[in-house]
Image 1 (cartoon, rainbow, N blue to C red):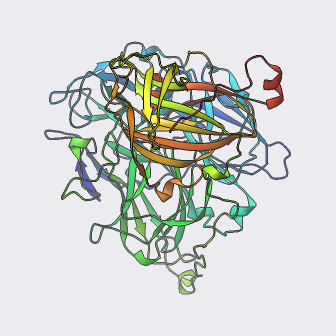
Image 2 (image 1 turned 30 degrees about the vertical axis):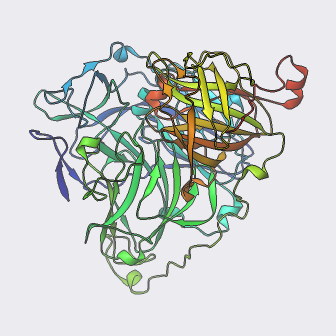
Image 3 (image 1 turned 90 degrees about the vertical axis):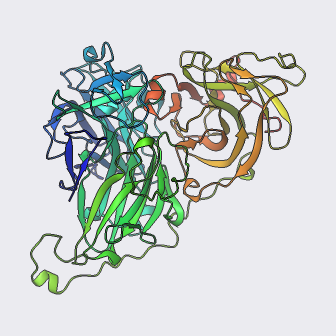
Length: 628
């Protein structure tokens, strides 16, 4: 056991690591014989211990748990869920704002070395206005969890999920307008597993050897004596969204898990509001990163074609990303491993500073505690006694694991390329930028026809951006929308393929989530964005944002995705098909404080025949790409 001080001395706040077992959420399974299984999941307040040394923490929960129960269903089995709001208590966390906070995240509301945090007016009076979104689901717009259709206490959100999707790891969470970051922070998250025959033929570890790992960070309030009260503290600053010093897995701070020396399957979800993780396994015997034991077999939206060894550089997950991971503990009998995070915040993908190794704290980069959890590997192989169970006849003749890592995972997987798209696919351009007033926005961009550029040489106009693509051709784009309430511009035809080019003009990584569809990255390109003048909202004529280089796509990003990390100074091109459902949906940054602050827009999907008889709906305002 390791005892750690969380913040820079002096501090009286101490928690012991790895003293609490990992909590395994209960599972709700659909009866395969039921033609339409139905579930009622009640949302209500509960006081739960996040650590055995803490007082109980007030939370809002799905079915009394943090996280909520795991829904375990099969492909093509339609289910109904009644999300019933029974929350009767005020918002349970302290929501505070600090104008500027260089250095560590701080536990205390008021830390002399950091500054005085001010509670945000009105938060304590917030009603429990809730709305559940099944993230990654192909379902009609009326079932998707439209954020303004949130419920007050006593009402139910009725949703149907057709599950006409391949096997994958989904998750559900609150999505209420303006307060998603607060409601999720209060505890409203849970996992949803979708299975099919293709997955089952692989014979992957299952039962007690298939374990959800829902990772998030939190902060805790302190009393006047510096002691932790157990109450959650959502403290943000003028420059950063929420980043907390405590890492939780399945609702417990720094837990441990006892495992056998054999194969396990972990469904890993980053459920943090804004923190990105780069995860490693360290052998506690030598404090070195282990390699060769962990394999990535699936991403957000399904299995890969073949397993990928997780490299020493780690497994990166931005908020809302999922990873399906196999770990072989067979070589670690009787030893202990730690999962640690090495991602500095705000995350850019920068390498660690010289002399710093994964597992070392980086307080100046808002990573005071890299530890995530501990694995305690028993001596008995799978089939023998569980760790801590007495030996006996069962241990004398243990069964063998028998599992072998498959060379092929999903025969239906294919790597998407531009050449594989139909000729009539639609192109769109999206800019990620701060508005001239400093607020965040999603800039839907339309190309200005050649010869009609509205700017004079050297002039900067708000909303006009010039971009020089890899072919050397410069195109001029005009902002069509940037905030949620701007007019709806993008309408997709059902079953149509689209290519979205997402250009990050800001200084921070944004994980972009598109509802309804899954997609793959086609290209990642570096751009010189110095020509973008954020204070004026555009580029000067003749000083475009310019292509620098084509970047390699990390193999871990080549699977099917519904969240895509877009680093600053890059253009990420993704392609996907709008199939399986119709209605009005959202796309947004999954840094939840960014989403609530304006980085969310809407789009619609309609049957093509319906669009063809309407006025002005045929093209959905797609855009040509010029030399990009």
